[in-house]
Length: 150
Image (cartoon, rainbow, N blue to C red; front, side, top):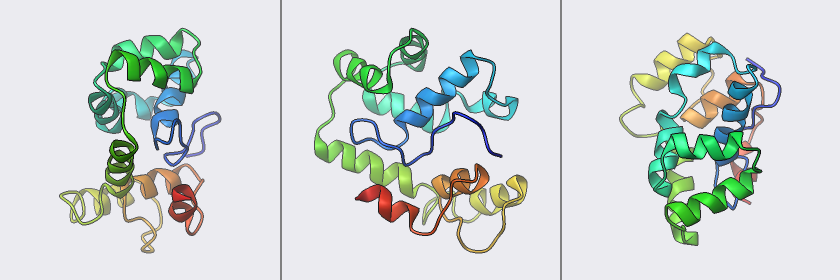
């Protein structure tokens, strides 16, 4: 489902994948423009993992976003309130996030079921959670992940 204003998983803020997406979902929800299908996972899943990795609460991060701060300002707030990540810690985060669903506990059940539930083609393109999101929101293109790592 295409959603105006939602950012993709591979968009980077301060070198981090996904952070911009989380912030865009918060903004869209605040403007009543986020589809209801997204409500259950706000602050959970990748949002929750990102906040825990940064050492901040989702609710406090959400307040920073809704206060009108840019993504980079919110990330800098996270670094000062929680913990500042090293380049290696960002690499570890990006590697985990972008590969979730590939050769892990989601591979055999979650990903195949999500492909069916989302109604996306089961053509071998969707291997990770990021792939599923990008295909579902009509941003997918071949080698998208390669471009993101450049």
